[in-house]
Amino acid sequence: MLKDAQCKGAAPREKPYKLADSGGLILYVTPTGHRSWHFKYRFAGKEKQRVLGTYPDVSLKEARTLRDEDKRLLRQGKDPCVEAKRAALASRLSAADTFELLAREWHGKQLARWKPVHAADVIESLERDIFPDLGALPVASIDAPLVLATLEKVEARGAIETAHRLRQRISAIFVYGIAKSRAAFDPAASLGKALQPKPAGKRWPRVKNIEDVRKVLGITDTAEASPTVKLASRLLAITAQRPGMIRWLCWDDLHNLDLTGVDECPGAVWRVPAAKMKLELGRQHDDDHDHVVPLVPEAVEALRASYAINWGSDYVFPGGRSILKPMSENALSYLYLREGLRGRHVPHGWRGTFSTIMNEWAVEHGREKDRLAIDLMLAHIPEGVSATELKYNEAKILKRRRELSTIWVSMLMQDACAAEDLVAGRRRRKS
Image 1 (cartoon, rainbow, N blue to C red):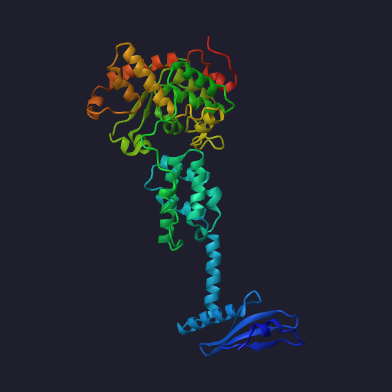
Image 2: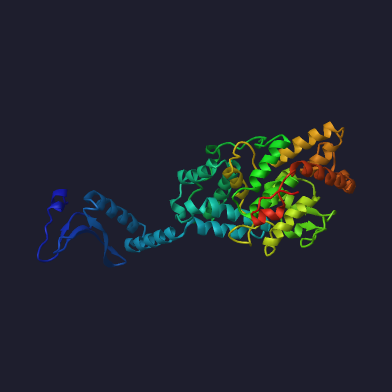
């Protein structure tokens, strides 16, 4: 058997030569001084050799271990050379099988059972938050610390619920990969408790008096942002709907509205299909009725201003890079953050602001019964009120909701600029 000193001292000669160890292991030395390990064996009646590696990169001890592994393969009736080629090919295929490829394949498998809105939201979230870090990595190389580091970047911007949703999506992708024999385990499965807990009954930062409300509207109206984002922010403030509903608003959802005219369109409404409501709210929205939002003249004005620049898209507020997609999930949040409103008022905060101010107004004016209409404007169904009852009184309630919207907007938009000025970049005030 060879010793390390013999291997180190194996000097080149005029012709190649071999130093035998044991069990078919050989150190092959060339005239240039290159030394390599060879394993000599017989398979199917033929003598064969496999190169195990270069010395000293592969030590004597390591070469013996490789030889023993090849002998184990021989006992199993396998050719070590063939198995080595198979392993090399599998390694190359594994390196080419990236997380993004697996994720897009998984996403494609879900399209038949998902609503288009949800499918678009899922792939956009992966493209924005996951693919930049994990997309190009081989599936087999991704472990829990890598996934956690990626999700913590999402947490760092305050998007706690988004981080949890992304963890679920990554986990689903790896489960699919395991079923396809392209992943060995799910590195995201146990990370739920490693993330910050989801806020329970979260209270979104918001202003609570009408003077501050007007200031926030003025800040967002005059911000350095695209007209589309500023118009979306204005419609959000006027209607007090969820930011996600504003984001996914399509022209087809608008009724009794002439987008190219000048009339106030007193019967204009935004009808959110029940399917969209369930997609947005999940179990929080259990009835099968559409959510109808009355559109006051100021809302109509904002929609017409957006139509003038976005008429070629299906979306009222399309993305900056493609009119085929809605604006980014974080476009409004980034606008408010850039304008210094962190911890003071966020896009979702308009709902709480509207509820606080309008319920105070109702009490001051002896209109306590307006609480029901105010809740319905926010798509909240009060306890003890059935969906059937609401459907029966829909026309009467909608009329009062439109009146309350008019009162809210008269307070909100005092001295606000015209919607067309948000498009033109002007900052003059309405007369």
